[in-house]
Amino acid sequence: MDFAFTKEQEMLREQVCKFVARECPKEFIRRSDEEQLFPMELFRKMGQLGWMGIPYPEEYGGSGGSPVDLVLLLEELAMGMRALASAYYTTVILGGEAIFVAGSETQKKEFISRVCQGEILLSLALTEPNAGSDLGSLTTSAVEDGDHYTINGQKVFITGSDVADYMVLAARTDRQAAKHKGITLFLVDTHSEGITMRRMQKLGIRAISANEIFLENVRVPRANMLGGLNEGWKNIMKTLEMERLSMAACSVGDAQAAVNEALQYAKERVQFGQPIGKFQMVQEMLADMQMEVDAARLLTCRAAWMLQQGMKAIKETSFAKLFSSEAGMRVANKGLQVMGGYGYMMEYDMQRHFRDAKINEIGGGSSQIQRLIIAREMGL
Image 1: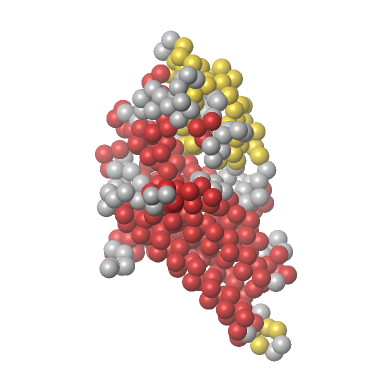
Image 2: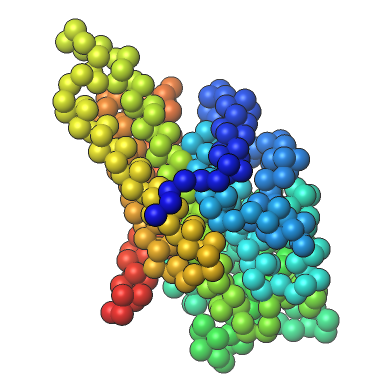
């Protein structure tokens, strides 16, 4: 088995590493977290570097990168600034992937190309107050109205919708059909009349928002329907592998940053006349932390490689997302323990790794949902 990256991939990794070192100093990251500031300027710069187009083919304005390329990009971004990596995958990949798998050629050439050029950001609006893991229970409605559809309802926990230009929104278009059969996707201009957003206060990854969205008689052109009528559920399912892969890569990068910080602290912190890294119990924690990160990285790279080969990877992307998210939480928790009281203080970054890690076990399909998916793929 060949575990080596190509020369081009190593160059990409080095380029991203230098970018975050230059553009994401600690003071900037802390301010973005504390003041909840979206890193729009960094997005513009990444667009100029061509990174927005990595997930998409050249025919739609992308660079034709592979899932492995995407994993490398997200891991390095997350290692430097987790919120930046999360902002990338939620505003570039999630909505863009829905357009890519469900949109018409006209829609893909228009919207994907603009995403790749950094002209627009997207958001994915699925979750509702009573439809989270049970997404098929969504009640937001879209009613045909001439050459438009009129949408009414409510969404919640929608990431980045306040900075997005468009959101890919799931709505019920047939109330008589089985709950998974009557859903359709629409591309909705976030500045449309009748849309109200409320930013929600959350625990971690605070530089990118989570929003509650209210839709009252929002008119969307029929031309903005993504995929066929009542085919939304099928199209949503096609995007989940990339979502899980992206979350896994972000978890790996952030967990590695936590290991690096705890390791540096253990080398410098002196107690009982020697650095605490000389004590075997601290060594054990750090060894376990790095082992978990490496295991998560391997699972993530395997899933990315399978997708790159065009192979079915439902189970493998769930493996990667589940293990990486839970490992990230364990790593951040041990990192806090290594740093003791200092890790608990807001002046140090370990508390942010701890706060940022938790959402990975919830978003993109909770750990419990991932285990159900894996069991189903095992034939249970």
